[in-house]
Length: 272
Image (cartoon, rainbow, N blue to C red):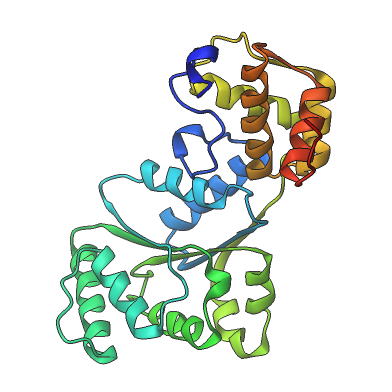
């Protein structure tokens, strides 16, 4: 609705996980480096956690775009699947045609797939999003799956991505063996106050802004206090702020605009 008014080629503050909009804050750069290191050094199991809306999925999508042709990947979004369906989905996402749908058969197929990729000097990466939803039994099965290795290296790398509850679940005594196999762990913190402005103008620039859309310092401060530095919440406020600015035909967004948007997001009803 407001794109033409602001001269934008697309909406800058969608809450979808679009890697083209990824803003690499200091923490996101560090998380990305940890992921690349864990994959290249074949560390086996990697764990990435962060609050809801911290940019975990977007970071993983950017990672997939960064991997070379010698790295085969699968991205599992539905972590609530039963054990057998999850294994089947993993195989199919890697392009393996599943034969008999038994655990022994699928495990053998997966092992053969990994050995074939190794013979081609390829690496294999499995990403499981929302991993905090995985049941302890399934996590233990994934640990057993991670035992597929040669004498010198892991046959595939598994990235468990989830909310802070994932860390709590992995601290369970029942998952001690899995926890000991995690080679890389990183927690994505929210954006700092000083990064909020850079984040907002980065997304505007990617969306095609020529620099004429301005947020006042007070508006930026208010966005930070409301969002706590969580990118998804920043996007929600800024998208509503652009719509509000469009209605009154201005490209300058101040604290009054932001305060009104926050109240509307929180369900405050204004008298007309």
